Image 1: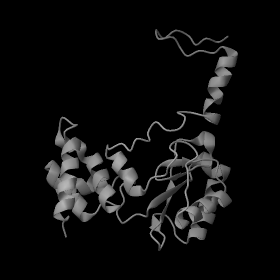
Image 2: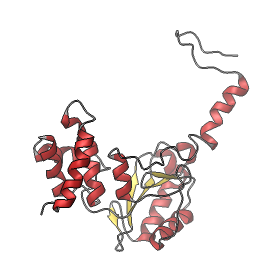
Image 3: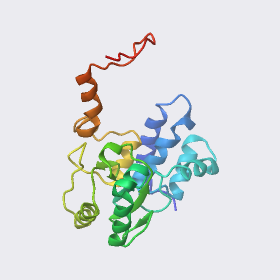
Image 4: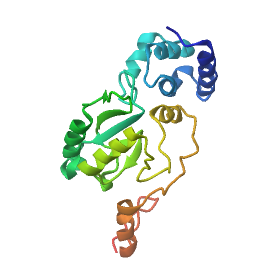
Length: 226
């Protein structure tokens, strides 16, 4: 089953804009996969065929890329993709326990979706936010310094339709489809919301300033060791 004519027309307009950003059409495959995911909630068979047709690729080439990256879903995702970091630091700070309790609480495992279609749970490898461990993400927005209790409350609030605000970043949490459209290259105007860095992320800078430490000189000279 292919896309309805009005959907196809809209996707083609967006796809042509994306393709126009690159010197070679095939370079647009990653954002195009996000585009069809923003329509279907995952990279569907129709979406794969659409990407192949727009870029002059075989479907096998598209599938090979879509199945390589975990951000592209192979089955319908929930409205909120909830990821729990279980990499080294988050794990020892409580990430493993958060995952275990949250999975039991929600009744779903890795890459599974709750019956109401609200939540897809995912075990994540490093969110690059170790200074706020243990960390969770909802549709790629940060929820820092989590506990099993706060994680379960977060999921309960999302399922109940309550307003949930990320710890850092924008003051509004978008849906998984909306997040996919942003990743396709269509900004939602929230990229600059919230501080660029805060809290523990700035501790090293504060210590360096207090001690008069400086970065190496541009000419490769020694680090200031005062």
